[in-house]
Length: 185
Image 1: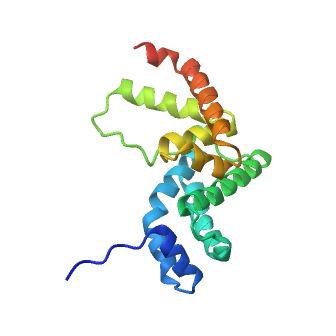
Image 2: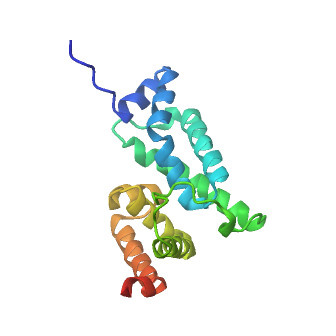
């Protein structure tokens, strides 16, 4: 007996459209961690990232009929998440609460043995990425942390692949300036 292959995201989304409620559970199991990680890097707040990830899955379910067969599921999902993160940022600017620096760094790969220099450099990178303008920060987060192509990012943020390339170039230039001290070492 050969094991059956796990259905693709697109197949699972089509099953959800056709009324298979458990299909949403499969998508959540596959995508919760990468989605929360992306949203944490966008919001720099663990609780907001969790709330926004849950809201993304709620919206995904509510708007399941809008998913187009043949479209890449991850692009559609990250577009929903990015729109929610943008709305959240707009609300946060109108009603500021806690400092970004107070947020715990939950999704790092640092080990207990990481030395102080590495921790300082990692904090500097996080702060530099957070300091980027939103359009540049979104491009960097999707390219570097979600490993999406320029075409996928373009579909998510609503620009062209060339526009994404330009945003990434500008972001990297700004980051080089902000992190020059660490790049020399």
